[in-house]
Image (cartoon, rainbow, N blue to C red; front, side, top):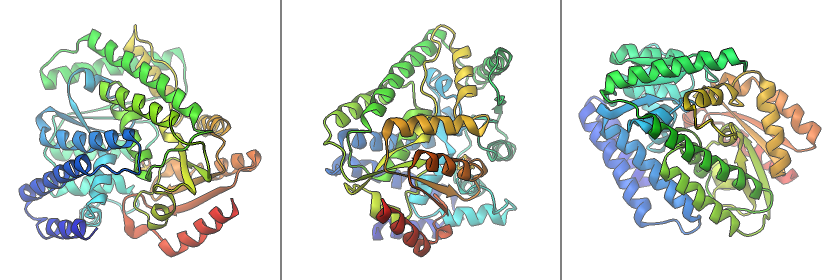
Length: 416
Ligand code: SF4
Protein backbone atom coordinates (compact mmCIF):
# COMPACT_ATOMS: atom_id res chain seq x y z
CA UNK A 1 0.00 0.00 0.00
CA UNK A 2 2.80 2.42 0.92
CA UNK A 3 4.48 1.81 -2.42
CA UNK A 4 1.25 2.65 -4.23
CA UNK A 5 0.83 5.82 -2.14
CA UNK A 6 4.42 6.79 -2.90
CA UNK A 7 3.75 6.25 -6.61
CA UNK A 8 0.49 8.19 -6.41
CA UNK A 9 2.27 11.15 -4.76
CA UNK A 10 4.85 11.25 -7.55
CA UNK A 11 2.05 11.34 -10.13
CA UNK A 12 0.21 14.08 -8.26
CA UNK A 13 3.35 16.21 -8.05
CA UNK A 14 3.75 16.06 -11.83
CA UNK A 15 0.20 16.62 -12.97
CA UNK A 16 1.24 19.63 -15.03
CA UNK A 17 3.46 17.39 -17.18
CA UNK A 18 1.08 15.16 -19.16
CA UNK A 19 3.81 13.28 -21.04
CA UNK A 20 5.51 12.34 -17.80
CA UNK A 21 2.18 11.27 -16.22
CA UNK A 22 1.45 9.17 -19.24
CA UNK A 23 4.75 7.38 -18.78
CA UNK A 24 4.19 7.00 -15.05
CA UNK A 25 0.75 5.46 -15.59
CA UNK A 26 2.20 3.14 -18.18
CA UNK A 27 4.95 2.23 -15.73
CA UNK A 28 2.33 1.56 -13.02
CA UNK A 29 0.32 -0.71 -15.33
CA UNK A 30 3.44 -2.53 -16.53
CA UNK A 31 4.61 -3.06 -12.97
CA UNK A 32 1.14 -4.28 -11.94
CA UNK A 33 1.12 -6.67 -14.90
CA UNK A 34 4.50 -8.20 -14.04
CA UNK A 35 3.67 -8.24 -10.35
CA UNK A 36 0.49 -10.28 -10.84
CA UNK A 37 2.26 -12.47 -13.40
CA UNK A 38 5.13 -13.35 -11.05
CA UNK A 39 3.42 -13.25 -7.66
CA UNK A 40 0.30 -15.24 -8.33
CA UNK A 41 -2.12 -14.89 -5.43
CA UNK A 42 -2.43 -18.50 -4.32
CA UNK A 43 -5.66 -17.85 -2.46
CA UNK A 44 -7.58 -17.33 -5.70
CA UNK A 45 -8.48 -19.65 -8.59
CA UNK A 46 -6.52 -19.87 -11.87
CA UNK A 47 -9.25 -18.00 -13.72
CA UNK A 48 -8.79 -15.01 -11.41
CA UNK A 49 -5.09 -14.94 -12.17
CA UNK A 50 -5.71 -15.15 -15.92
CA UNK A 51 -8.42 -12.48 -15.92
CA UNK A 52 -6.45 -10.02 -13.77
CA UNK A 53 -3.52 -10.18 -16.17
CA UNK A 54 -5.82 -9.80 -19.17
CA UNK A 55 -7.58 -6.72 -17.75
CA UNK A 56 -4.35 -4.89 -16.93
CA UNK A 57 -2.93 -5.72 -20.34
CA UNK A 58 -6.01 -4.60 -22.22
CA UNK A 59 -6.00 -1.17 -20.54
CA UNK A 60 -2.28 -0.84 -21.18
CA UNK A 61 -2.64 -1.86 -24.83
CA UNK A 62 -5.36 0.63 -25.61
CA UNK A 63 -3.48 3.46 -23.87
CA UNK A 64 -0.29 2.62 -25.73
CA UNK A 65 -2.04 2.45 -29.11
CA UNK A 66 -4.35 5.47 -29.27
CA UNK A 67 -4.15 5.43 -33.08
CA UNK A 68 -5.86 2.05 -33.02
CA UNK A 69 -8.15 2.64 -30.09
CA UNK A 70 -11.73 3.72 -29.46
CA UNK A 71 -13.17 5.07 -26.20
CA UNK A 72 -16.33 3.23 -25.24
CA UNK A 73 -18.58 2.67 -22.27
CA UNK A 74 -19.49 -0.67 -20.78
CA UNK A 75 -22.69 -1.11 -22.79
CA UNK A 76 -21.12 -0.37 -26.19
CA UNK A 77 -21.32 -3.20 -28.73
CA UNK A 78 -17.60 -3.98 -28.96
CA UNK A 79 -18.04 -7.06 -31.15
CA UNK A 80 -17.46 -4.76 -34.15
CA UNK A 81 -14.25 -3.41 -32.65
CA UNK A 82 -12.97 -6.92 -31.95
CA UNK A 83 -13.74 -7.97 -35.51
CA UNK A 84 -11.93 -4.89 -36.81
CA UNK A 85 -8.93 -5.36 -34.47
CA UNK A 86 -9.57 -2.03 -32.75
CA UNK A 87 -8.69 -1.77 -29.07
CA UNK A 88 -11.50 -0.51 -26.86
CA UNK A 89 -10.74 1.60 -23.80
CA UNK A 90 -13.77 1.56 -21.57
CA UNK A 91 -13.98 4.61 -19.43
CA UNK A 92 -15.39 2.92 -16.32
CA UNK A 93 -12.40 0.58 -16.16
CA UNK A 94 -9.86 3.34 -16.72
CA UNK A 95 -11.36 5.33 -13.85
CA UNK A 96 -11.31 2.28 -11.57
CA UNK A 97 -7.62 1.80 -12.29
CA UNK A 98 -6.95 5.47 -11.51
CA UNK A 99 -8.74 4.97 -8.21
CA UNK A 100 -6.52 1.93 -7.65
CA UNK A 101 -3.56 4.28 -8.17
CA UNK A 102 -5.06 6.72 -5.61
CA UNK A 103 -5.18 9.65 -8.02
CA UNK A 104 -8.93 9.74 -8.65
CA UNK A 105 -9.37 12.64 -6.19
CA UNK A 106 -7.00 14.86 -8.18
CA UNK A 107 -8.67 13.97 -11.48
CA UNK A 108 -12.17 14.52 -10.08
CA UNK A 109 -11.21 17.87 -8.56
CA UNK A 110 -9.74 18.90 -11.90
CA UNK A 111 -12.95 18.00 -13.74
CA UNK A 112 -15.05 19.90 -11.21
CA UNK A 113 -12.75 22.92 -11.33
CA UNK A 114 -13.34 23.05 -15.11
CA UNK A 115 -17.10 23.27 -14.65
CA UNK A 116 -18.21 19.62 -14.53
CA UNK A 117 -21.08 19.17 -12.06
CA UNK A 118 -20.05 17.49 -8.83
CA UNK A 119 -23.20 15.34 -9.05
CA UNK A 120 -21.89 13.56 -12.16
CA UNK A 121 -20.88 9.93 -11.62
CA UNK A 122 -17.24 9.68 -10.54
CA UNK A 123 -16.42 7.10 -13.23
CA UNK A 124 -17.10 9.90 -15.69
CA UNK A 125 -15.55 12.74 -13.68
CA UNK A 126 -12.29 10.80 -13.25
CA UNK A 127 -12.07 10.14 -16.97
CA UNK A 128 -12.93 13.73 -17.85
CA UNK A 129 -10.28 14.97 -15.36
CA UNK A 130 -7.63 12.82 -17.05
CA UNK A 131 -8.76 14.20 -20.40
CA UNK A 132 -8.61 17.81 -19.14
CA UNK A 133 -5.05 17.29 -17.95
CA UNK A 134 -4.16 15.79 -21.34
CA UNK A 135 -2.97 12.60 -19.68
CA UNK A 136 -5.07 10.63 -22.13
CA UNK A 137 -3.93 10.49 -25.71
CA UNK A 138 -6.54 11.20 -28.32
CA UNK A 139 -8.17 8.04 -29.69
CA UNK A 140 -9.41 7.70 -33.27
CA UNK A 141 -13.06 7.11 -32.42
CA UNK A 142 -15.63 7.17 -29.62
CA UNK A 143 -18.65 4.92 -29.30
CA UNK A 144 -21.46 4.89 -26.79
CA UNK A 145 -25.17 4.18 -26.46
CA UNK A 146 -28.11 6.16 -25.16
CA UNK A 147 -29.17 3.27 -22.94
CA UNK A 148 -29.02 2.79 -19.19
CA UNK A 149 -26.44 5.36 -18.13
CA UNK A 150 -27.75 8.91 -18.35
CA UNK A 151 -24.21 10.26 -17.96
CA UNK A 152 -22.93 8.64 -21.14
CA UNK A 153 -24.28 10.87 -23.87
CA UNK A 154 -23.25 14.22 -22.29
CA UNK A 155 -19.84 12.87 -21.25
CA UNK A 156 -19.03 11.41 -24.66
CA UNK A 157 -20.29 14.52 -26.46
CA UNK A 158 -18.07 16.63 -24.25
CA UNK A 159 -15.03 14.39 -24.80
CA UNK A 160 -15.61 14.19 -28.52
CA UNK A 161 -15.84 17.96 -28.85
CA UNK A 162 -12.79 18.54 -26.67
CA UNK A 163 -10.65 16.03 -28.52
CA UNK A 164 -12.16 16.68 -31.93
CA UNK A 165 -12.68 12.95 -32.43
CA UNK A 166 -15.67 11.38 -34.23
CA UNK A 167 -18.33 9.98 -31.96
CA UNK A 168 -21.15 7.59 -32.72
CA UNK A 169 -24.06 7.40 -30.28
CA UNK A 170 -26.36 4.42 -30.75
CA UNK A 171 -29.88 5.38 -29.82
CA UNK A 172 -31.39 2.29 -28.15
CA UNK A 173 -35.19 2.29 -27.76
CA UNK A 174 -36.74 1.23 -24.46
CA UNK A 175 -39.17 -1.27 -25.90
CA UNK A 176 -38.55 -4.30 -28.07
CA UNK A 177 -40.32 -4.42 -31.44
CA UNK A 178 -39.47 -5.38 -35.00
CA UNK A 179 -39.22 -1.71 -35.87
CA UNK A 180 -36.93 -1.00 -32.91
CA UNK A 181 -34.58 -3.82 -33.95
CA UNK A 182 -34.45 -2.52 -37.52
CA UNK A 183 -33.84 1.00 -36.21
CA UNK A 184 -30.83 -0.11 -34.12
CA UNK A 185 -29.56 -2.43 -36.85
CA UNK A 186 -29.44 0.48 -39.31
CA UNK A 187 -27.47 2.54 -36.82
CA UNK A 188 -24.99 -0.32 -36.35
CA UNK A 189 -24.48 -0.52 -40.11
CA UNK A 190 -23.87 3.23 -40.23
CA UNK A 191 -21.56 3.07 -37.23
CA UNK A 192 -19.45 0.38 -38.92
CA UNK A 193 -19.22 2.53 -42.05
CA UNK A 194 -17.86 5.32 -39.85
CA UNK A 195 -15.36 2.95 -38.25
CA UNK A 196 -14.23 1.70 -41.66
CA UNK A 197 -13.69 5.24 -42.84
CA UNK A 198 -11.78 6.36 -39.75
CA UNK A 199 -9.61 3.26 -39.38
CA UNK A 200 -9.27 2.71 -43.12
CA UNK A 201 -10.11 -0.98 -43.08
CA UNK A 202 -13.10 -3.07 -44.10
CA UNK A 203 -15.17 -5.17 -41.75
CA UNK A 204 -15.01 -8.83 -42.72
CA UNK A 205 -18.52 -10.15 -42.12
CA UNK A 206 -17.24 -13.68 -41.60
CA UNK A 207 -14.92 -12.41 -38.92
CA UNK A 208 -17.83 -10.67 -37.20
CA UNK A 209 -19.84 -13.91 -37.40
CA UNK A 210 -16.89 -15.72 -35.81
CA UNK A 211 -16.83 -13.16 -32.97
CA UNK A 212 -20.55 -13.70 -32.40
CA UNK A 213 -20.08 -17.46 -32.53
CA UNK A 214 -17.43 -17.23 -29.82
CA UNK A 215 -19.72 -14.91 -27.85
CA UNK A 216 -22.52 -17.49 -28.01
CA UNK A 217 -20.17 -20.24 -26.83
CA UNK A 218 -19.01 -17.96 -24.03
CA UNK A 219 -22.56 -17.27 -22.97
CA UNK A 220 -23.31 -20.99 -22.80
CA UNK A 221 -20.44 -21.21 -20.32
CA UNK A 222 -21.76 -18.21 -18.38
CA UNK A 223 -25.11 -19.97 -18.01
CA UNK A 224 -23.37 -23.16 -16.84
CA UNK A 225 -21.28 -21.19 -14.35
CA UNK A 226 -24.46 -19.60 -13.04
CA UNK A 227 -25.92 -23.03 -12.29
CA UNK A 228 -22.97 -23.84 -10.00
CA UNK A 229 -23.26 -20.72 -7.88
CA UNK A 230 -25.94 -22.16 -5.60
CA UNK A 231 -23.75 -25.06 -4.50
CA UNK A 232 -20.09 -24.03 -4.89
CA UNK A 233 -17.88 -21.25 -3.60
CA UNK A 234 -14.80 -19.65 -5.11
CA UNK A 235 -12.53 -17.65 -2.83
CA UNK A 236 -12.11 -14.39 -4.70
CA UNK A 237 -11.69 -10.67 -4.04
CA UNK A 238 -14.39 -8.18 -5.01
CA UNK A 239 -12.27 -7.05 -7.93
CA UNK A 240 -12.91 -10.43 -9.55
CA UNK A 241 -16.60 -9.69 -10.01
CA UNK A 242 -15.74 -6.26 -11.42
CA UNK A 243 -12.97 -7.59 -13.68
CA UNK A 244 -15.54 -10.03 -14.97
CA UNK A 245 -17.23 -7.06 -16.66
CA UNK A 246 -14.34 -7.07 -19.14
CA UNK A 247 -15.30 -10.66 -19.95
CA UNK A 248 -19.09 -10.36 -19.91
CA UNK A 249 -19.22 -7.04 -21.79
CA UNK A 250 -16.36 -5.28 -23.58
CA UNK A 251 -14.28 -8.29 -24.63
CA UNK A 252 -16.99 -10.92 -24.96
CA UNK A 253 -16.51 -12.52 -28.36
CA UNK A 254 -12.73 -12.68 -28.01
CA UNK A 255 -10.95 -16.02 -27.76
CA UNK A 256 -9.28 -14.91 -24.55
CA UNK A 257 -12.57 -14.35 -22.77
CA UNK A 258 -13.88 -17.70 -23.97
CA UNK A 259 -10.77 -19.23 -22.43
CA UNK A 260 -11.42 -17.30 -19.21
CA UNK A 261 -14.93 -18.75 -18.85
CA UNK A 262 -13.62 -22.25 -19.63
CA UNK A 263 -11.12 -21.81 -16.79
CA UNK A 264 -13.79 -20.35 -14.52
CA UNK A 265 -16.08 -23.29 -15.14
CA UNK A 266 -13.28 -25.70 -14.28
CA UNK A 267 -12.51 -23.73 -11.15
CA UNK A 268 -16.08 -23.69 -9.93
CA UNK A 269 -16.61 -27.39 -10.70
CA UNK A 270 -13.59 -28.20 -8.54
CA UNK A 271 -14.42 -25.68 -5.82
CA UNK A 272 -15.54 -26.83 -2.37
CA UNK A 273 -19.27 -26.91 -1.54
CA UNK A 274 -20.75 -23.60 -0.54
CA UNK A 275 -20.25 -22.71 3.10
CA UNK A 276 -20.60 -19.51 5.09
CA UNK A 277 -23.03 -16.87 3.90
CA UNK A 278 -23.33 -15.76 0.32
CA UNK A 279 -24.21 -12.28 -0.80
CA UNK A 280 -25.63 -11.29 -4.15
CA UNK A 281 -24.72 -7.76 -5.27
CA UNK A 282 -26.94 -5.47 -7.28
CA UNK A 283 -25.08 -3.43 -9.92
CA UNK A 284 -21.59 -2.60 -8.56
CA UNK A 285 -19.22 -3.73 -5.82
CA UNK A 286 -17.32 -1.07 -3.85
CA UNK A 287 -13.88 -2.54 -4.40
CA UNK A 288 -12.06 0.29 -2.63
CA UNK A 289 -14.32 0.52 0.44
CA UNK A 290 -12.38 -0.66 3.49
CA UNK A 291 -15.22 -2.50 5.27
CA UNK A 292 -16.24 -4.38 2.16
CA UNK A 293 -12.63 -5.29 1.52
CA UNK A 294 -12.29 -6.61 5.08
CA UNK A 295 -15.46 -8.68 4.93
CA UNK A 296 -15.49 -9.98 1.38
CA UNK A 297 -12.01 -10.25 -0.12
CA UNK A 298 -11.04 -13.95 -0.14
CA UNK A 299 -13.48 -14.60 2.67
CA UNK A 300 -14.97 -18.02 3.26
CA UNK A 301 -17.31 -16.58 5.86
CA UNK A 302 -19.07 -14.09 3.58
CA UNK A 303 -18.61 -14.67 -0.08
CA UNK A 304 -19.73 -13.00 -3.28
CA UNK A 305 -22.47 -14.85 -5.12
CA UNK A 306 -22.42 -12.77 -8.29
CA UNK A 307 -23.84 -9.46 -9.40
CA UNK A 308 -26.65 -8.83 -11.84
CA UNK A 309 -24.49 -6.65 -14.10
CA UNK A 310 -22.53 -9.72 -15.20
CA UNK A 311 -25.75 -11.48 -16.25
CA UNK A 312 -27.64 -8.70 -18.02
CA UNK A 313 -27.95 -10.66 -21.28
CA UNK A 314 -28.00 -14.45 -21.30
CA UNK A 315 -29.39 -15.40 -24.71
CA UNK A 316 -27.88 -16.34 -28.04
CA UNK A 317 -27.13 -13.82 -30.75
CA UNK A 318 -28.17 -14.56 -34.31
CA UNK A 319 -24.93 -15.65 -36.00
CA UNK A 320 -26.39 -15.43 -39.50
CA UNK A 321 -27.35 -11.80 -39.13
CA UNK A 322 -25.00 -10.40 -36.47
CA UNK A 323 -26.12 -6.81 -37.01
CA UNK A 324 -29.68 -7.80 -36.20
CA UNK A 325 -28.56 -10.08 -33.36
CA UNK A 326 -26.48 -7.39 -31.70
CA UNK A 327 -29.31 -4.86 -32.13
CA UNK A 328 -31.60 -7.29 -30.26
CA UNK A 329 -29.01 -7.74 -27.55
CA UNK A 330 -28.77 -3.98 -27.01
CA UNK A 331 -32.53 -3.54 -26.73
CA UNK A 332 -33.13 -6.61 -24.59
CA UNK A 333 -30.35 -5.90 -22.09
CA UNK A 334 -32.07 -6.26 -18.72
CA UNK A 335 -30.75 -2.86 -17.62
CA UNK A 336 -32.43 -1.20 -20.63
CA UNK A 337 -36.07 -0.17 -20.59
CA UNK A 338 -38.49 -0.42 -17.70
CA UNK A 339 -37.26 -1.25 -14.22
CA UNK A 340 -39.46 -4.36 -14.27
CA UNK A 341 -37.08 -6.00 -16.74
CA UNK A 342 -34.12 -5.58 -14.40
CA UNK A 343 -36.19 -6.76 -11.42
CA UNK A 344 -37.31 -9.87 -13.31
CA UNK A 345 -33.68 -10.76 -14.08
CA UNK A 346 -32.67 -10.20 -10.45
CA UNK A 347 -35.54 -12.49 -9.36
CA UNK A 348 -34.39 -15.20 -11.80
CA UNK A 349 -30.81 -14.91 -10.58
CA UNK A 350 -31.83 -15.07 -6.94
CA UNK A 351 -34.00 -18.13 -7.58
CA UNK A 352 -31.03 -19.81 -9.23
CA UNK A 353 -28.22 -18.73 -6.91
CA UNK A 354 -30.19 -18.73 -3.66
CA UNK A 355 -28.02 -16.21 -1.82
CA UNK A 356 -28.39 -15.55 1.91
CA UNK A 357 -28.54 -11.79 1.42
CA UNK A 358 -28.59 -9.02 -1.16
CA UNK A 359 -26.59 -5.80 -1.06
CA UNK A 360 -27.04 -2.80 -3.27
CA UNK A 361 -24.24 -0.29 -3.03
CA UNK A 362 -25.78 2.89 -4.43
CA UNK A 363 -22.99 4.60 -6.31
CA UNK A 364 -23.26 8.37 -5.97
CA UNK A 365 -24.52 10.04 -9.12
CA UNK A 366 -25.88 6.84 -10.68
CA UNK A 367 -29.54 7.59 -11.14
CA UNK A 368 -30.52 4.31 -12.79
CA UNK A 369 -29.16 2.44 -9.78
CA UNK A 370 -30.47 4.59 -6.93
CA UNK A 371 -33.86 5.01 -8.62
CA UNK A 372 -34.63 1.29 -8.43
CA UNK A 373 -33.47 0.61 -4.88
CA UNK A 374 -36.86 0.37 -3.19
CA UNK A 375 -38.35 -1.74 -5.95
CA UNK A 376 -35.52 -4.24 -5.48
CA UNK A 377 -35.94 -4.01 -1.70
CA UNK A 378 -39.64 -4.93 -2.15
CA UNK A 379 -38.64 -7.90 -4.29
CA UNK A 380 -36.17 -9.09 -1.63
CA UNK A 381 -38.81 -8.73 1.08
CA UNK A 382 -41.31 -10.77 -0.97
CA UNK A 383 -38.66 -13.44 -1.54
CA UNK A 384 -37.77 -13.45 2.16
CA UNK A 385 -34.13 -12.46 1.61
CA UNK A 386 -32.45 -9.79 3.76
CA UNK A 387 -31.57 -6.70 1.77
CA UNK A 388 -29.15 -3.90 2.55
CA UNK A 389 -28.56 -0.74 0.62
CA UNK A 390 -25.71 1.62 1.35
CA UNK A 391 -24.81 4.91 -0.26
CA UNK A 392 -21.24 5.55 -1.32
CA UNK A 393 -18.84 5.84 -4.18
CA UNK A 394 -17.01 3.07 -6.03
CA UNK A 395 -14.33 5.43 -7.35
CA UNK A 396 -14.06 8.57 -5.20
CA UNK A 397 -13.07 7.18 -1.80
CA UNK A 398 -13.73 10.53 -0.11
CA UNK A 399 -17.47 9.95 -0.52
CA UNK A 400 -17.60 6.82 1.63
CA UNK A 401 -18.75 7.12 5.23
CA UNK A 402 -16.54 4.30 6.41
CA UNK A 403 -17.65 4.37 10.07
CA UNK A 404 -21.33 4.49 9.25
CA UNK A 405 -20.96 1.79 6.60
CA UNK A 406 -19.22 -0.50 9.07
CA UNK A 407 -22.05 -0.24 11.58
CA UNK A 408 -24.73 -1.01 9.03
CA UNK A 409 -22.77 -3.69 7.18
CA UNK A 410 -21.81 -5.47 10.41
CA UNK A 411 -25.39 -5.41 11.67
CA UNK A 412 -26.61 -6.84 8.36
CA UNK A 413 -24.01 -9.60 8.18
CA UNK A 414 -24.56 -10.57 11.82
CA UNK A 415 -28.26 -10.89 11.15
CA UNK A 416 -27.73 -13.41 8.33
S1 SF4 B 1 -22.29 3.92 -12.29
FE1 SF4 B 1 -24.21 4.58 -13.25
S2 SF4 B 1 -23.86 6.70 -13.91
FE2 SF4 B 1 -21.85 5.76 -13.50
S3 SF4 B 1 -21.14 4.95 -15.42
FE3 SF4 B 1 -22.21 3.28 -14.43
S4 SF4 B 1 -24.35 3.39 -15.14
FE4 SF4 B 1 -23.33 5.35 -15.62
